[in-house]
Length: 74
Length: 210
Image (tube, rainbow over all chains, first blue to last red; front, side, top):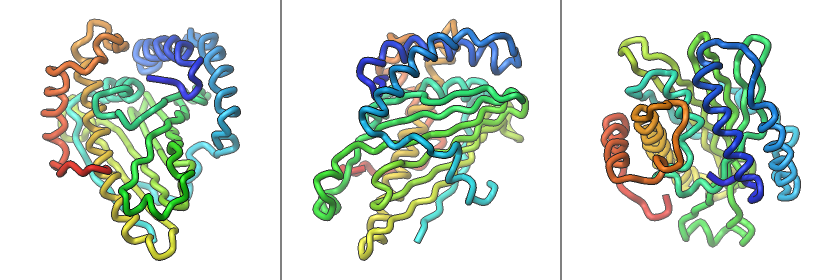
């Protein structure tokens, strides 16, 4: 799958592979040992955040789960 | 005027697999309208929940009657935010998805909750809700109806995509990783995914712009 930053796709792939393994083998099993993906994440984020700014995508300042606040509980 | 839509589906996979597949469902044979996918924020909280934000860009397909009323700038892609919380202790995954742009034409917000089925073993219950609205004066009703129809059609595709990712994950020796070769649309996997998905979703008549 492509990144919104064309040059970030390889970095995204590296990070996704690391994350998917950590998610299934560690996170879901309650293993809280050190996250092995911090470095790949950092590199990927540096690239993609730059692309987001360049493309003027209005993600900045959007509150996490923002619109969920005014919805009744399921 | 907001249209509200909700349904429940049983997914015949364990919650753990569904949670893993959730991150790996793009690309799939049913997601040609999804152009890009990026994680733009992620954090493990102090109480060991995973907070994530994904940014997706999707094509914006409008029927011809709607295209006429929107300036040419409206052919721009739709930006979508998907925020999610994974709670591995209580075994639930909650997602909230909404579009960042084109909101005047149509705003679609969707909340999904994936949790263990209380009734069936090795099954995940998906509760889905959507709020669809449009503020275009004079056109809001037809646009809402169109939005609802497209949303339902996209839900079917989304389920097929998730089932596709799940069927591949279940066949893999290393279930946490979908190899790129497996992601190529193979006839067998697509057929299996179709069968799984059609058991859970209502059949939809194919529509050109949806």
